[in-house]
Length: 370
Ligand SMILES: NC(=O)c1ccc[n+]([C@@H]2O[C@H](COP(=O)([O-])OP(=O)(O)OC[C@H]3O[C@@H](n4cnc5c(N)ncnc54)[C@H](O)[C@@H]3O)[C@@H](O)[C@H]2O)c1
Image 1 (cartoon, rainbow, N blue to C red):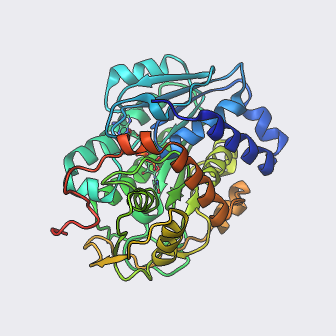
Image 2: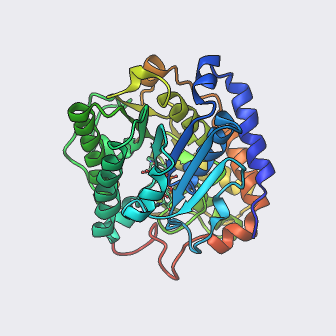
Image 3: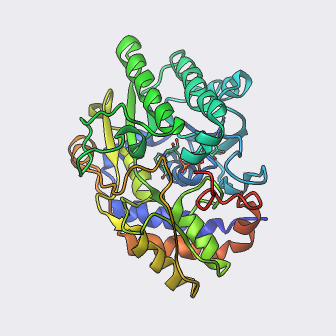
């Protein structure tokens, strides 16, 4: 069971070439020791590759993950790169964190989380344990060493509550959150603000929107694009929750990695929170039809009631603040990003199928009790 890493590494190299990072950013990362929590995850695995390239042979990436997002505990999504040190461990566990912090990272990217909304509804206590207690523990360790930045993976769907105006801007605050995941992500930002204010810990809150791209294995609790790809590859009907007119701001995973890299560099980002998104809306129906087309799936779309917690018929982020603060600019449009996603999916289909975590009869998108 081995992933075709050349494809993913080339994808990241080509992305960085196209991005043309400012030479000062390239210099800033060279030779650093960087800790990425959740480094075997959908976004983390891409960030590991990008930062491994940027820190170079004199630098080191420490990636820690407990493999809870996939069915089989395996480092399948951990790129085998010389300057990457992988630790199988848990952000709630002191022994794991001691192993990480013994390496004295100067930058931290905290992506590990109990993913995501429905999972947190089904397992609220573990969700809080990982996303609140694990997070505070990590902040305590980070406070013991000298770090230049701690970049936190927050979530746009979590922060902006139920009925905000579009496009979503950072200054909107809502107390109407609909899942424990959303609450815990919001709490994570609040703890970050506390540690930043009280201890001057240099923290940056990045609010992601609907990531997609190579690296995400489907599963009961995963995002809609990998899951629809999975069902379509099996010739099954795609189960839309709603009427399909709902929109999401689908963001290519390497554009998110770009935002993280820049957030880790710019001092102006410290103590701030900002959206990282494509800044474009795509309807679920349009996305589903694209999935069916590329997989030659002729099964009809199926429409189910929207899930009770899903109170956001449209998601569209303003990316003005990220543009202004960290010079963020998405460079991959949906068609291109989606085609990379499809290539990766087809190329690794046997492994993806084996690692996809769908409990029998438990597709959360079509479950009756919602
Ligand atoms: N994917 C999205 O669309 C999206 C949107 C908004 C925010 N985010 C945030 O971005 C981050 C990364 O998301 P992702 O899509 O890569 O998710 P993911 O589930 O693929 O990655 C998270 C990784 O953390 C690991 N993990 C979970 N609990 C852990 C623990 N206790 N100790 C160590 N590792 C643990 C998982 O095994 C997984 O590999 C998360 O914090 C998520 O909340 C993601």
